[in-house]
Each structure stands twice: as C-alpha cells, then as structure tokens.
Amino acid sequence: MNTTKPDLSASHRQAGASMIEVLVAILLVSVGLLGIAGLSGATFSYNKVSQMRLTGIALVNDLADRARVNVYGYDRGAYDIALSDNYAGTAATVPDANLDLDPSVPANAITAADALAAADIDQFLRSVRNRLPQGDAVVISRPGATARDLDVWLLWQEPTTDAGDTLFGAGQGNCPNSLTPDEQALYSCMYFKVGL
Image (cartoon, rainbow, N blue to C red; front, side, top):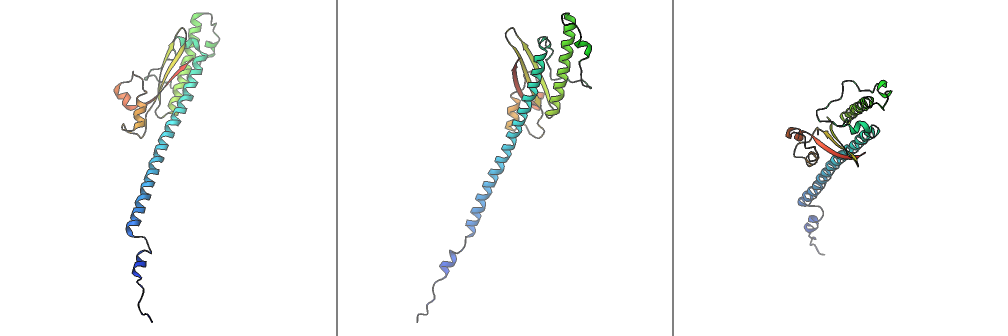
C-alpha cells in the first residue's frame, strides 16, 4: 500500500479569494457608486434649471399677452420695468371709471391705458416674486414701425450655490447690462425676447 498523502496545500490556496482581490472589488464598486452619485447631483441641477426655464416662459407669456391686449399702453412705454420697481402694497386694480371713459378723447385713452398697464405690471411682479426665489424682473419695450418687441430679463437669487458653480455663472451671463457689478454677482438671469 501506498502511504503517501496527496499535497492539499495547493488546492487550499485556490479555494477562496485573496485579500487583494476583495480590496480591488471594493475599490471598483466604490468608484462606480461615486460616479452614480455625481451623475444624480448633476441631473438634479439640470432639472432645476429646466423647471426655472419653464416657469420663466409661463411668466413672460403672461406679460406678453397682457401687453398685446393693451397695445396703446405698450406703445407709451408703460410696460417698462426697472430693477428697483416694486409692486404696490395692495394689489393694483383698474377702476371701472377708467374703462368707461370715451377712448376717442386722448386724455381718457392715456388714463385707461396707463391704469391697465400699471395693474398688469403689478400682477406680473407679484407672480415673479412668488414663483422665483427672491425673483425680480427688468422689462424694456421696443415699439417700432414694423414690429413691437419686448425684452424681458427674469432675475433670481440662487439660495445654495456659490459663485464657482457653472450653472450660476451661466445664468449671470444673461443679466441685463444695466445691473451694477454687485447686482450681477447676486443674480442669475434668464433673457426672453417676445414679439407682440
């Protein structure tokens, strides 16, 4: 009889994973999870920008519709808004007496158009400040012989981003030139050009 025992040490070494293989596997899984986390954060940021853009489009379309209804007020420049403009403490309304005035009399037409534009601007600024974080607006009307254009900048303050954020920096490039450097550092902006 053969009394030699088989060498089992070689088969024992191949039975399990070594410590180095386990550490490499953990490293690869960790890198994958970090990549997924970064992708999720970027997706959230881009979704936020998309949501802000849709909100801005709805606000600007509302203002453009109001200006289209009151073309005379638009032609008089009553729809212009500076950054420092503020809405009234109570909501502005158009008195019925202004609407009953004879529009063929120039003074009556001016009174009615200006009152309607003031109420429209008041409502627009309220909507902007309710729907955008610390929102504001700058509007410049450009009446012309062949076209009526409305330049609208919607401004808001990013609550949690710092100046190094690329999305914040991209929004700053859309701000109107009339802003001071301090205001440009504070706001993100969206620009819209609307033809009436």
